[in-house]
Length: 357
Image 1 (cartoon, one colour):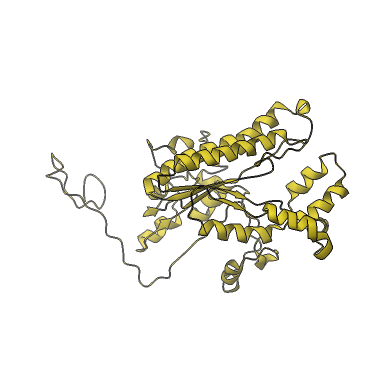
Image 2 (image 1 turned 60 degrees about the horizontal axis):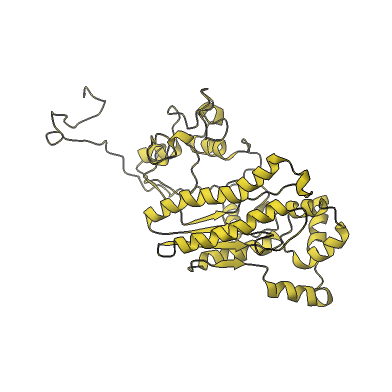
């Protein structure tokens, strides 16, 4: 047995040239099945149509129809703890992931990374001869490990994965708004939160992602537009509209900056979508809700209508500076002129009725 570590069969001499490395042989997989795990971050159990949602998810439904659907599985409603439990098969507190992994609190249940005492499914599969690959969001490493300088003790390659995939498409879609009151009545905290989330966050995310995309030689980054992007004005959303107007300039500036690189920059405009945020903010604007709802019924669309189209157009796009917009000027004019006469829409009315059930 080696004096350096159990199972080491190489040779350690005075110089590297005189030394011989060794790696333990992994057993060959004996015809085992391929294993694919797909994690949808922040998606509720009722979002796939196989659980009753109106959003069409045919591929997920197909998997569910030939497999098991767990209806009584519970975990903490946060991304990092959920992934830690899924990877280890253990309670997230016991593997050092009480909350999101950004911070090491100094306590065993919140170290910001999966405990080295906890094996991951990737590590177990590797011992059985499997090749392992991880792509997408990780968020299982503390902040001090999130720079190129390292250390990188809690990243996929250190947790059993042979490879960690690239970022093909990044969408800056996080957005919040202030209370719909006069500027003089706004709290400083909500002003800063709106600016930091909608504008500063998009700029910082673009900065980080662009650096990685330049390294990998490809990638697309999109900004989410909203009311105010085109300069349109409305009382009560001065701060929100300003962030969206500024974000449009940033999108154009970034597209110009990266025009001679393999990075594509663009914007996505979903239009008016019937959501809790739309209804809540519209009701709180002080305007006549029933009057506003007549317009929203004509112009608004359901999530399950808009989303598939936006996804398809984003995947097809290869043009830098592209604006992918669902609710175009032509569509708005057409709906306002002819919608009430020939195709009466009740989008918001239907949404409200469903929410009351």
